[in-house]
Image (tube, rainbow, N blue to C red; front, side, top):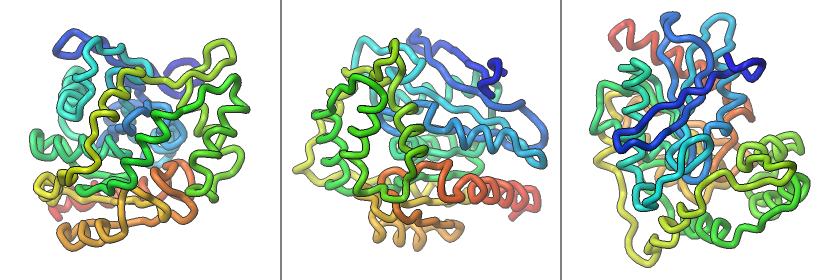
Length: 300
């Protein structure tokens, strides 16, 4: 472990030579699948810190948790070509990291973009995924949600201190997240920004915004329903924030129609995307993963 942080840092080299980073919580083995955590578009491994501590530290069923920073985010190096900030490359990066760790099968927990990467992996590496938790993401996403993401990223203010950072995030997201406490907001901000001598700095390569600007929100959005069908082979837990603009209730319902093993949770008072350490979600996720393992062991 990394001192009293609860995790160790894992650095590895991608196929194109870029140095990438992940956090590893807990030990391998123990009879449980590791859980691989994949964050959202501009987010990083810190999003999963509290959840990872709880899952890896469970006294009865501890499991190793591997939280990745995509290229250009968190502790991973920035790519000199922003065009490599795409789901296909990022999926390859995850596979490379897991290969170097010797992980051949795992449960996956993906928030937003992380869930889209899981759709790709389900097709390209079907034996790798044993169970899937999709946090406020599905095979069809809403234009209004993408427009909101692009708007707040392109118009993001630069806070002078962490108090101002909390105020900024509340102004942008507060209406969709009335359930969050002051402590939740502070933890949320600590995950988004890195601390540079007391000044919060968004912890991603600003060139990533080029991918956001390239979105054509006037054209029909492609969907991933064929890729979602590949997830039919594994149990899936789909979590939706009740106030989400990205994942509609109708899409969640259709996901259940197409996937007979789908379980769903709607989180009141949260939008896109729910904080996985809140609202009883750690226990729900732990129970889901345990059931998935038991069913796999019994051949169900």
